[in-house]
Amino acid sequence: MVLVNLLQASRGSKKHGGRTYHVNLCEHGCTCGKTLIYGFPCSHILATCLFHSIDFRSFVQHYYTMQSYFSTWAPLFKPIHNEYEWPPHVGPVIVPADSMKHVSSGRPKATHLHNEMDVRESKTSITCGLCKQSGHNHHSYPNRNMGVGPS
Image (cartoon, rainbow, N blue to C red; front, top):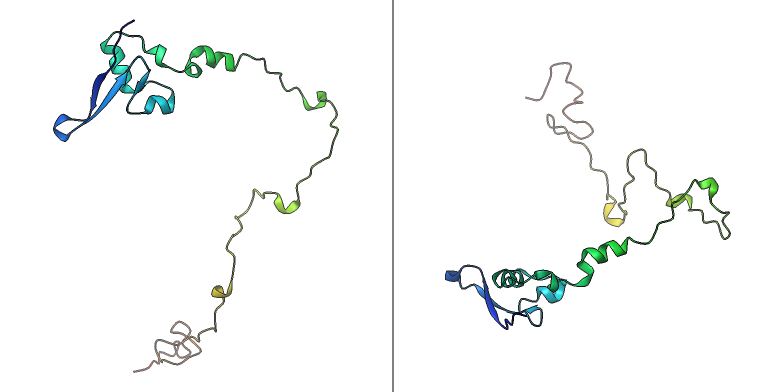
């Protein structure tokens, strides 16, 4: 077994003052903390293993191995057959309320909740831009067809 207690691995450029991490291969740890959090060796441990020709797989937690992955899916799945082949259901029948059903067609309903801020105080009267009188606007000016307008 190769005994490498501490190896400094730097991150970032040296002129900007890169950080220094300590890798302890005997304890399978690094001061960056990523190995402890993720259960997978960080880049500092991988660089140290490559430098010392050590197989990095011994630093990987058992649940990341291919053997654990395959053992997860090892139990057989029972296929779901045709619904007519299912055994009869014994128990309460749960039916959703009509108000909870999602309507898939048409325009979506607005979810705005109206309150007193949405109510107008009073309707403003229309004022004409040509004659400055209320009750009509310049599009519906009563003397428009006569060619008579304010001067």
